[in-house]
Length: 455
Image: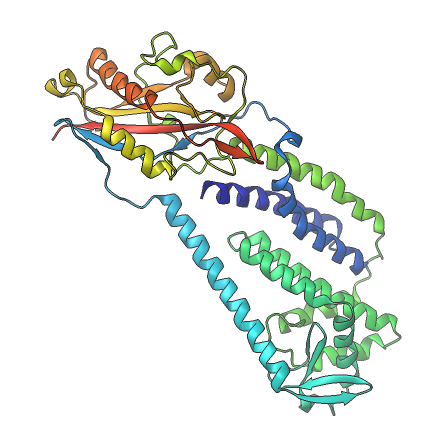
């Protein structure tokens, strides 16, 4: 789930950059072929950038990352650790909503394709001027790949010749390919308004391409504009024309824009570099965690590496890079750590007796790293400060927060008992299956909360 969200964030950052560039440099350019090439390249580029190998990516300093916040457990004063109630996380709700709308979009597209395919077989064929047409009043004047639909009632219309020539241009230049690609593109990025604007730009440009070709063939511009107004635009959503485009088409035919030059395509190089930079930044700082524990912790104390009561502290991470979200997140005991690691902690954690007897409650947050070898290590503050670009005195490896805002802060010795117990159990974790980025095993950080409560 984290992988999908991180990928979508990267993809849409690139999309916004490329669309803004289109509005700035291409929208008033009458070289519609160059616009088409740019738009199709801009569809492909956001998908490519997030897939660039990690070795080719730039490091970004000065950004404070957020570790993945696993769902915690609650251990009660009786000494038996219990998992927190089976609530559905915000991330899972987001993922379900995203996939549901994506599925609806795919179903809608499939219905449209089936409808058009059926129309191809049941429509009556006509031969006009050496071109085979499909007579179907439902689709009016529209084209889909190698097929042209015509409303039989429009054949006797004075504008029929213009209609037919316009659709033949769509057919000859395979404009349906652009339409299918942009429909798939907007389904994947349905939540981004820029994706919908991008879609509209692709649709508009295909009409402009056909209109400009009609004028270049010697058709009278005024008569051709009248024929556009006289058309009843087809309703097939993935055919080539929409009534909402008529006004824009006529406006474009009358605009005195200059014919642009192909040199503008060279803009794709710096734009790709800019998008690549922001994608790299997004990967460095991205997080799918619903909350950053650092924002809500009442920091009481932190452990230094010498104070860590754990055998894991003896295994430094040196200067190995640290990741917070990767394409393949680590797994624990062959499953999702949100479930399996919590079960492991629940089976082994015990409420410290002295803390329970003195009524001490609270929530402990612990940060740990699953290394590229699968070993779980509680990092030392110096390493964490370097990775998070923070001063050493601001780094929290293990922190305490009161369960209730009104609760008094217990003595430090009892807080230390809670911290020690969490560190003990976490540090005894069996090895994990390491996470991977671009196919390479890497170090991944997690934050795990444990709540101590008395019944």
